[in-house]
Image (cartoon, rainbow, N blue to C red; front, side, top):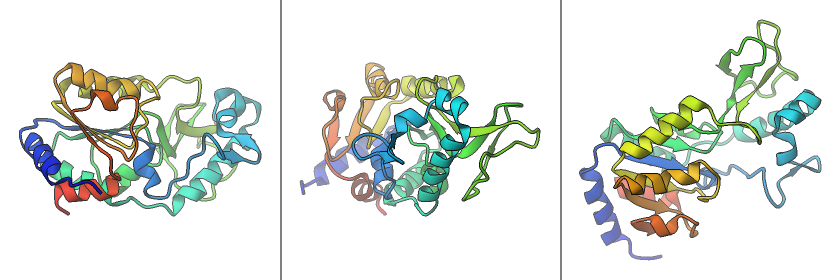
Length: 243
């Protein structure tokens, strides 16, 4: 393991002078809690790819099948808890009241850990949205009644962004604004591939922000970073914030 002492001191020095730090998080931070990937090699459910189930067309064609898939995912996630990286970010938010977390994850672990200001780009698997009245509410039923219905009688769907759908306009607008205003950004456990999240770090850099990537593997956006820490977030972030 590399000696990170000087790197930590440099990052701490930059943080102390930061006005409104931002954290961009991806699947890597959730993987340290044991959240499995439902995409890519081996990411099959009943011999079907997640990409073929998480679409508006699939839901219109067979809402019961899609809900069975999401009920399975919710049951898997029900036993998952935040890891030390999530809690380190909570501690950071206590020191920096304007800290914003922008996450690509739908598992809700940042909020479960206690982070107060989280922008969920792709939604949250623990929320439902009514296709009739539009009502959005938290639902942690495991298992969930399939297919679930709203009090108005309308069909409920997971409040997540499916393939082919646009991100919530208010959330992505807030994320862009945070990237434009921040002077310090952590990029934690994200591949740097999926847009528009992948554009946030370069956007912050263009506006003068100091960028720190925390990821065991290099990513396509590593080259724009000021510091690249090739460590697990759950090991590095607690050490950085002193817990």
